[in-house]
Image 1 (cartoon, rainbow, N blue to C red):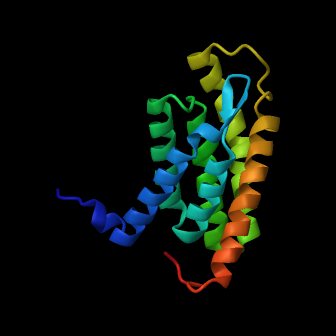
Image 2: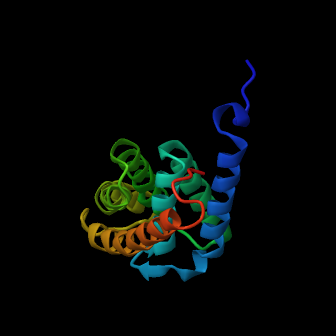
Length: 169
């Protein structure tokens, strides 16, 4: 049973995911500590971009790889996983079905700010010893996602006005 990454994703998509992961890794020191979490608006912008330009699958791959590298480098926490995966997935699905940049941004905010924040609570409790309320992460995750989603949406709108307009990666 032979499977190849290039049979699943095109080389162009793999390259774009790699570039977005590299940008997310380089931008990792610009996170904001909030309790046991480190909110990272650049990741949310990357999620919106990846979701809209590449689709939900590659967006989730980029989110997982960026979160993994950030954790290995010590610039992230285990909360990066639920915070980014659900946002990337919903951003990609929203753009796939509705083809609107602002809906990709809203998908990111709902995925990270609500679903990711609620999933982050048991992760924080079991892995980080967090003893706060289950709703603690909703406000910081949503604010971080809001700022990053707006950045991603602005970049997408500029992308659509540039020389590569309407050209999907």
